[in-house]
Image (cartoon, rainbow, N blue to C red):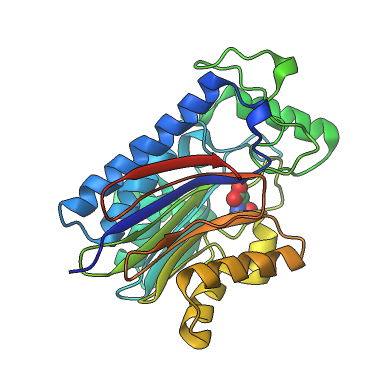
Length: 326
Ligand code: ASP
């Protein structure tokens, strides 16, 4: 019997205590806690790491403040294009989708790609056709509309820039009445988003999953790291990793796989390997973070940005949720 473990993220970036309101912080914490509890109760009742990861990421996708599923950012054209990937470390099989539309929980579609096709990554219309064939739950455009994401797009369009998802977010829709002036993050900052989960089950099997709307104002079919196995998501029998940050940097760093390679070939511990991969990212001016777990149930959550929405449950069942850096 192995020690079960679970870690999650909801994005990394310029997340400063001084710019957070108590109401907003409480909302973020509750989103993270809900997801952790969902995944942990699955693991405790003997679920496979893969199932725990899927169910945890689904909870994060349904939470409107994170850039995945319901809370996804808008493209240049004002649409929502979603990417996700899941990997089962015990079989070393993976599935991903990119550029899909109107899929309520892309992580589950990614799992179907892994289990029901001979492919590892499906894109665009073809992926949506596959979703239809599989009877995957879809949602109308309105489901994905959140006012703060729409305002972000207007700001990004005005500034002529592609920006990460927490950037310039004057949240003013249903839950929060925050004045535009008291914006949570500056436009000049470089925060990131995306959600992910990694788990170790009672058998010591590992799994990782990541889901995102990508970057605000993205265009020309831009695809980030999240759905790319080895870049934003990876799991084998050594570790499971999910990344968040500026996707192009994680693609260049092949960051998720880099953690596993350091452990396998250089004999580094999970913590050393994950920190070294983030340090490596820093050398190419990459910014963000990752969550990782090994087959002994150790977890680590390093990042080089000011903060990262994150949480984990230790082997004693103690739940920790954190947002800021030290
Ligand atoms: N990595 C994601 C992407 O580049 C964005 C993020 O983590 O916020 O698509």
